[in-house]
Structure formats: structure tokens, C-alpha cells
Amino acid sequence: MKASYRNAAVKIVVRKAGVSPVELVELALSIRDRDRDAFDEIWCVCDVDDFDLAGAVQLAARNDVRLAVSNPCFEVWLLLHFEACTAAMTGYEQLRRRLARHIPDYDKDPGPFDRLRPGVRPAIERAQALAPPGAEHERNPATGVWMLATKFERPD
Image (cartoon, rainbow, N blue to C red; front, side):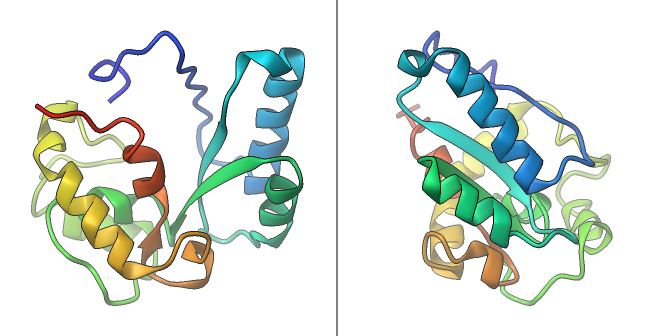
């Protein structure tokens, strides 16, 4: 996606698993605080996984950081590119098995964005139907990644 939607005004910082949502918001704030005028919006994309999101939600709200939360994990957003998903998911492994129907080699990397591009609009619509903005951490499955994705949408 990063390569498909090149925009000099967008800065993407990737952190691998193991960073808590609070740590992620703190990292975003430290990046923003280095040059406050450089950013119109700050977004953090995180999973619920086994984390308590209350602290991250409060810290983000106090500091005008937007959260795109996926519950239970980011893979729910990817699955929504291919099919609706309304039954509660236990976690990554269950979602990985469902994703494997569409991306047989899936293992934390969906591969080229071209695999997902046709499903972006359906994923946005399916995600919107799952939970209202800001309530993603309370509903399983749910994802707020659609809010960020709409900022990158463009006609093909």
C-alpha cells in the first residue's frame, strides 16, 4: 500500500509486534513533538490482541491522535477485503486460517497490494457495518482501519 499510494506528505513508521498500544501512541507523540508543524494528523494502527486499550484510547484522545484499532487483530481488516466476517474471532491463528482461503501463503504479510486493492471498497463497507468509529476495541470482530483507508482512496 505504501508504494501504491506514494505521497510526500505521508510519513509511515512501522513497528513490529510486541509494542503495546500505549507505547505506540507514545512513539507517535514523540515523532510529532519533534516537529509539530509537520503533521496535520497522527494515526496509530493497533490490535486489541491481549492488550487493555483503555490507556491508549485515553492518551490518544488527550493528544489528538487517531486510533485505527482492529479487534482481535489486524487480520480482520485483511479478511474483510474478501468476505464478510461477523462471528467473534479468537485471534490471529483463526483469522490466518480464514485468510488462507484467499491468500494461501499468508503469514503476517499479504504480499503485493494488488491482491487487496480490488477489495478495499468492500472492506471499508464491511468494516463500517461492524462497529461505530471509536468502538472497535469493544466489538469482536471490528476494525477502524477503514477510517484511515478512506483517506487514501482514489479512483482507479
